[in-house]
Length: 511
Ligand SMILES: Cc1cc2nc3c(=O)[nH]c(=O)nc-3n(C[C@H](O)[C@H](O)[C@H](O)COP(=O)(O)OP(=O)(O)OC[C@H]3O[C@@H](n4cnc5c(N)ncnc54)[C@H](O)[C@@H]3O)c2cc1C
Image (cartoon, rainbow, N blue to C red; front, top):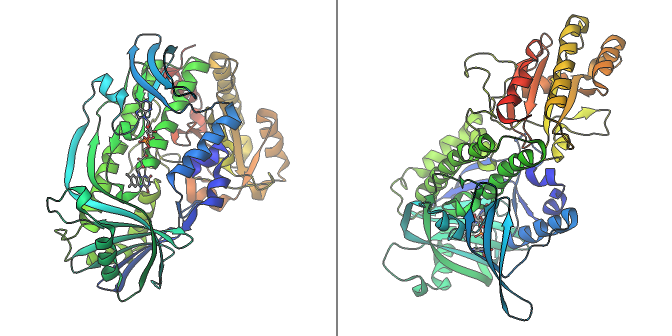
């Protein structure tokens, strides 16, 4: 949702999606645990359920309205040649009168978002390593009436060792995930009636009155991924690079985040002479571990919580009860579910400021999502509102207004570094923006205002308690944060070391 917000399309999702606020667990008809997302530091503290086809339409409209780009359907990539400065692709089109038309075109980059059976991946010769789980699961969209008290949240129900996942989609439509047996029946041998019967018994003593079955499928889960996400100018995103159980609801989200991680790097290469080799190799380095984690988490959810006769079925209700009993574990589960736990590893774009034990300039680790804060006096504008340009870095400068005069020399040195940076790399397109943040309680402090305005133009005032909790800022030390275009922390440093901002950019920018 934060990616969609940056693209300016989140309102459509908020308007159309069903907002589920809780994750509930039942065992033998009794409620055993509840996880809520409401403690998350985000305006999107819910699970938003929207059919993927609608998501694709909204994204297609965004492309058309913002960039005038039309998605061409009935167009198939046949093969390609990946050379040093371009990719030559051969495609087959089916025209409006049903004719087949071959085309060859040259493109700067090819991004294969062509799903689990990806032609791009196969042509690159990349192995899709992993396994296929023998069991089958059933997915069904049904219109039903139930008196389950938590029917507006996600529900996992266990009974007699069997498991059911019930997902609300709004208007009395629910998606059901249920384990098929592990017998060797072919997938066409299954009927939806047997699942409705199983679901009715699993949900008892609550009622489960099915009005209509809208969709039904029976599928096998694959857990596979590639090692390398790119070769030269060709990249893989989404299911082309990794597939896993739909249990954790992370497939599409992970694919969208792959693309969001990649495209700002390509934009930097194209617009500001970013170093192609370093920026593109960081794509695999950052995103491949995320896929490993998603495969492991979604696999664990599937095997432990959504399987019949799971080897942990006798104690799984105890596990979720224990996890839900502590604020820390509840928060960890919520963070993981919504992707806030993502942490990119150390690399040229993510420079750590010390180990987790040492006290760095900020409490956020490099490689983690930068939290949002509200600025006062900017019509309720938030920090994240500035992230709507997904190709620009943000240099955030926290300046405590008390005793500001002792920081004067450092602020001037920072201004020099910023000018140096601008002169060195900035072509036609600005690639960074500077935001100077100070404590709103001192907004009428003439000395600090005049000093900051003289150096930086605008000042952003924020609540110090919020800054302290979310960033660990203090009134002693001014701090600089370099936020990457995708909203993750690249580097944190003390203002007195401001020349390091040039050192941060030097390895991946060519002047
Ligand atoms: C039953 C089920 C439930 C799921 N539930 C969730 C969920 O709740 N949350 C979630 O985040 N994810 C969920 N997922 C996963 C999610 O659907 C996928 O991760 C997502 O669709 C991947 O998107 P993608 O664009 O990478 O690939 P796809 O959606 O597979 O799209 C690939 C596209 O490429 C096209 N294509 C293929 N080959 C070529 C070619 N040679 N030339 C041109 N085009 C080509 C295909 O026609 C297709 O349009 C679920 C998946 C399943 C099966």
